[in-house]
Length: 349
Image (cartoon, rainbow, N blue to C red):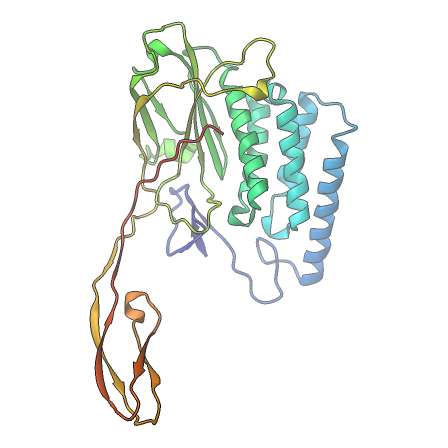
């Protein structure tokens, strides 16, 4: 099967499209990402991964943390979570919470080198691959840790230095550090995979600051984070774009805990954002239609007949036939329209 970034089945998935993926659909009694496992093999591996994740989480309280241990934790989590179809909910929770705790308590250390931060991004990407099956509270914690990681890493580079990109299967981040005087003079683009760069793909978000943000204060420094999660957590929303999350960040004040980073811009600013449609927009317009329903029987009491309105996306409509009469009646099946809608949220939490 081919799945888009909303987790919905599609007909094709080009190798140049980074927003879809192929999945194996297993027949009965076959399990795992490649359907190679029988039931008892799957059960043994799932239980083994669950015990590994529990041990992983417990080890945090007794293990000294340095860059090497952070790298080791990220590699361990990526390895355990590599096949989401061999995961129990307890395993997912414990491995994810171990990653969240590692970043929450050691964000600066996690950003001590791009390679370490990238390993952690890959591990979080493995968590996000679970998609809409991730519990809401866990998803909130994971996204908060990802935002903390990216906001911390944004200030590990010099002002004006080339943007830092982190790229994984389900998570992409572009980080820039700029002064307010240059904020309106440059574009900020989302991260692209090596293949997208090679084929000069236009599937990228481009943001420009048009005005505002006290841009005359040239000494003011901002971190700009453009984050995309390509695996959707909301199974009820069918999105056509990659849903970028944009933040303007202030460098941490001396002596303050880095976890208490605040958004840099409180005043109103104007942005121009171009977001690609990675999935075709769905436009569906069905007009109301009248159909004929026959009450075919003479009954001493009223009874019900059904109008088939399935062509318009609705289930059957019930018609009450009168007692002691039969005949035909005109019933109107309702119409409906589906059109794309641009949705934007402003959340400082």
